[in-house]
Image (cartoon, rainbow, N blue to C red; front, top):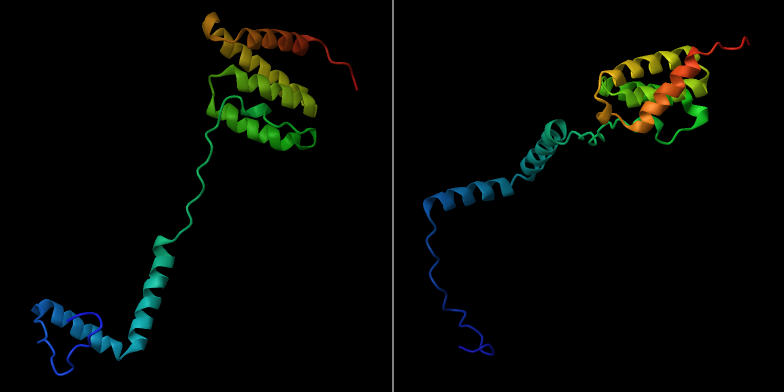
Length: 157
């Protein structure tokens, strides 16, 4: 037979025998085809279960705190917020004098001289506990100068 010829309508091949498992599955499909509400209800229930259990929004991964985060994007009108952010950096790096040195600057800008000097005293103590070659020379100079500023008497306001 070629493509232009039409098949003989009286000649039909015998239906193929399907395995028993497939015929049972098709029987249940054909039964559910007569009950569309069952399929719709099952789909709705599945969707609700997915929403309730598997579709919870994952939080965005947080950027890891770095020891130099205290002075990132400083804005003078938001010093209190930046000091709070720096508090978290100091807590994350309790043995590093650099975040304390940075927080000194934020406290000084906010007019919190007492808190600023407490940070420098603690930073200086931490720096003395470290080998000289492990501490940044600029940080060592900053600590010395800021300690000297804290020792000077403050003018009365």
